[in-house]
Image 1: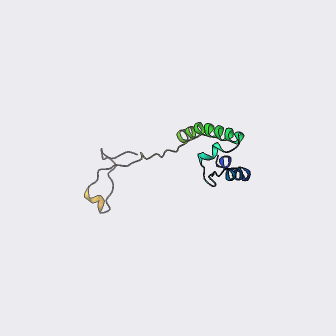
Image 2 (image 1 turned 90 degrees about the vertical axis):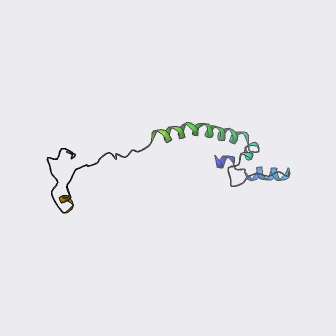
Image 3 (image 1 turned 60 degrees about the vertical axis):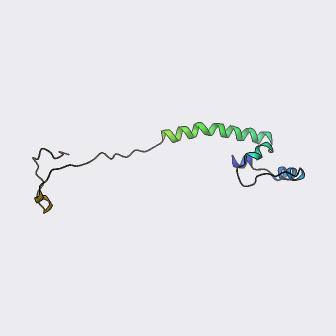
Length: 95
């Protein structure tokens, strides 16, 4: 879209003859009134077609991370000194 809205050398020359100015190197909307109608139509079609593409890919393509794995256990102070985890503890997670 930026290439389509950029003025050609002949369009710059015509603008200079009219003592007018154009945006060069930036995507300026002012240039759309001074470029050829074919490029203006292509610029508009690209703009219209990019909206659904951005909406589709921004909402449909994403990655989720499974962060639900956890382990809970009730231990005594002996566990802190290297003691065993009691397997028959009713509060420990079996997984």
